[in-house]
Image (cartoon, rainbow, N blue to C red; front, side, top):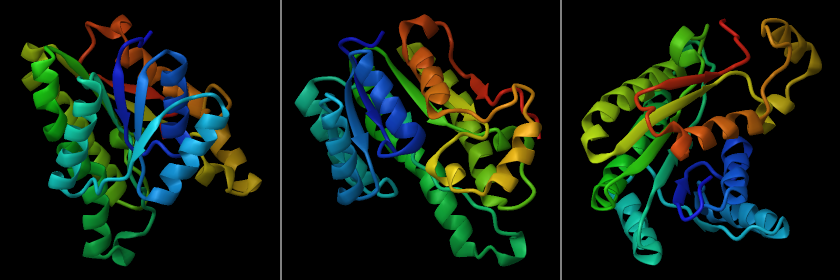
Length: 245
């Protein structure tokens, strides 16, 4: 479904990001993953190599536009075009507002929002030059419903939705589609480490009766990145088993 396409996936060293890297490789894309540091990037690349997948990796500071721009230019120079970016890197939060410092809040917004701006700003000129492209952002079910604590996280994901919808309108004349995937509770490392007594009540709130698998979310990214979604832009696609709380 993605043969001949070059895709950059941030937050690609674990969880949803790593599974999306795998799925894109299976669908013949040339994938470049970004991670937060050399060690995690090297570990992910080694794992993928053992699985028979050749992937490139970088670890730019996504909060620094000039660092991002430099790496994106290097990737474009290497492959000749950039067709897809998935802005998946991010951090969550669960502290009550009285316990959340201004530094905590700024850090969440920096990685969850500013990093998307930086990646998009650095990549759009190459997509325009290539007369098209796909930008996909990782949102969250809490961007629609909020959450009881950790206000910085849903606030950042509401912003992701705003970026997605606005950029879809701005970039549509250039054949650049912009969408987001809003996962529900998904079996990532963080969720897998939670005690059974915490997970089981959560599952009961999901009409489909299970939490999501990383492949469920990766499948949504694959659809939106592919030509099957060539007339889809400005959408926030919920992948949450109909969970609504």
